[in-house]
Length: 296
Length: 316
Image (cartoon, rainbow over all chains, first blue to last red; front, side):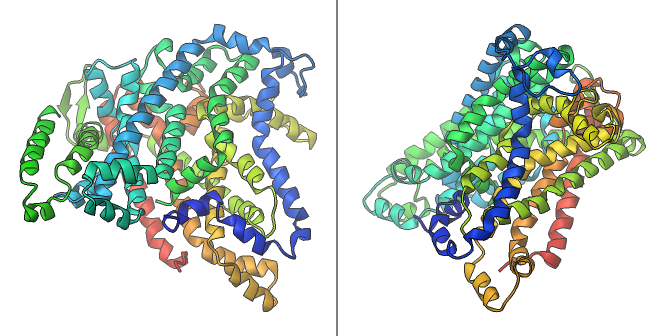
């Protein structure tokens, strides 16, 4: 198993520990310059978010003063509660969580079974079907958005959670990602189970799926990230404030309340926070998952 | 879908009874399971992707009415593509945006080679710092950047004023608006490029550097003659991804500039025009033709990059 997972390990940095030991000798002293550059660069990278936090705790007058006041003095925590008066934040958060949840469960289930079938099962026209699914990955979204909208409209699903979530439950990319993952698992385990008389379903469910947990993590993280942050599709299929997810709510909010910057900063921070926390907690898995999406 | 499930169940019954037949078992070792496994995905992909793709091609030759009916108008939409003055401008804007975001790749190479230096500590910290922008929501972080680029009290113009430059009204001035959006695009994609290139760096055998050291090669020489050539597959991959994603520019533009911005006509991307024509102006037939144009542009750019890669990408 470990052999097949080297690509993942390489991306996660699991295998680097060993190499760091061998590489570590000798040249450590000369790394001060590198640390200086990386630290300054890293602070520049996160400075917009630090600025956002500070501004979200300031007053409007402080934000709009020139030269800027970079410290609020008294923290204006009420900006965070004011968000709920400015926009239906709770409702929009719920919609974002719901569409993310529906797509996550749908993709994990559907992409893993289909991916497994394409990787390890024999059936007629497999190559052609896989080729068709692959071709969808290459196509930009503008090629299917309008008819997708017409379908959702025809079903009467505009402004509903199911309408926003529906197309994203199915994923050609996710199917391919899981196929690639299952292809990398050893055949011997499967053969042994088959000789023992296990059915194809049991082999998949009891043996292969648990081994594919890294692939499921990768797919899950990519799905959550994309679904949480997605803007254009929900923008198309929702038309009123209470039915849209956070991304749409924020994009439309700023036209209306442009001058209340502290509340805008607080709202946008609250919208990003769950993903940022998820990222920090699962840092290694996220990096591995994104890296995997790259190594297709 | 119900019919196909019924078919599958019927097939399941048949294969179940024939299980004793060794010949059939070799032919269909998995019985009905492959079909049960792929039918949901096949159904969803057919309904939500394949059929829409076919329909977009069809609609691009029609004029779609407000209530959904469409009349065949031949190549009228494509003729309009060639006479619409906002199309060339938007392609140019998208290309400029993409080129600026591509500048993040050399930056990512430099930073990744520092992070992956021998004996480097705090690697996880650095990776986290650089990767955080990639996971932020464009709709949310676009609002923050809007304030950062504010002409009157934004910190960017404050920094410029410290060195005696009067900063422009970034998001209200054509040209500057696109640069501002592209800077944010670069900021968001840098972490992704860094992760891919770091992975590429770790695949380079350490022995090569040791041999080069024995031969007395300087660090810069090692970087130029070992690191860069062996990194070309990773660089090629992030280039492809940057170009494909760059041509999808929409979220940041929509959030940072806003619909009513007077600089929008000179700043808008090709996908923004698609969105505007399809869902604001209700010219869905024309928007479908724009969609086909986007497909053609991305296909040509990707094909050209794959053709050119032979000249500079080294696969070991």
